[in-house]
Image 1 (tube, rainbow over the protein chains, first blue to last red):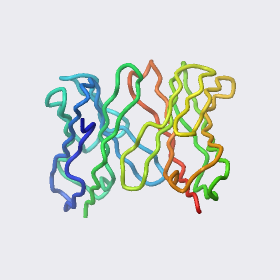
Image 2 (cartoon, rainbow over the protein chains, first blue to last red):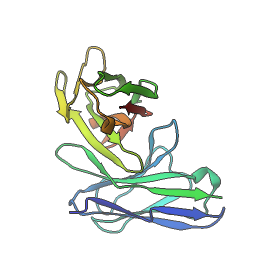
Image 3 (tube, chains in turn orange, red):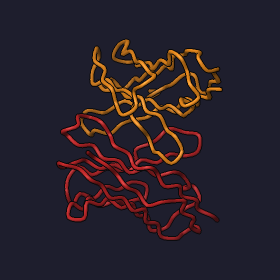
Image 4 (cartoon, each protein chain N blue to C red):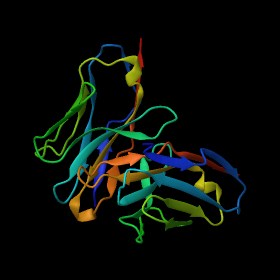
Length: 112
Length: 113
């Protein structure tokens, strides 16, 4: 039982490049989330998926797209990276009963 | 909208000292409250939770009581260890906002031997 896994762990991009961050969970959770973490700002929700086949915008969705590929996988895509997207990205999934979210180890993204 | 305000850090303590990290919240309904901990280079881990007023969440020697009258959920530990050094996040989830969590900014704790 690996919980929530994310790839890659670290990535450097040039402005304008695109990339997809991958996330998978093996806990059979319905809901999944993408957050970004910036110094002094806590975690901010980018997008979430309440169930397979649905996605919704969070606080800071601009510049991102998501795909809920199946129940296990939820990917985050940057179509044209900008320096303002330099951040640490966390994926999470939610246990329906307790409401608690379980987080992956994060992806550190640097956009030059 | 919902919001969570945490005590500003960083907090530096000596081993075996008493810890309090303050957390207050604003919500329109009756939220569930959580404390998460983030160790260096890792993702967030659920530390404890409380789902209704006067509930006390506890785990690994940490405790927090859901106080509706003061809209607070302060984190406490009687005797901290060096291994408790981490960033602590308070968060809330309100039923009316679905399953979304609102986080505080985090409080960095450093415990010195």
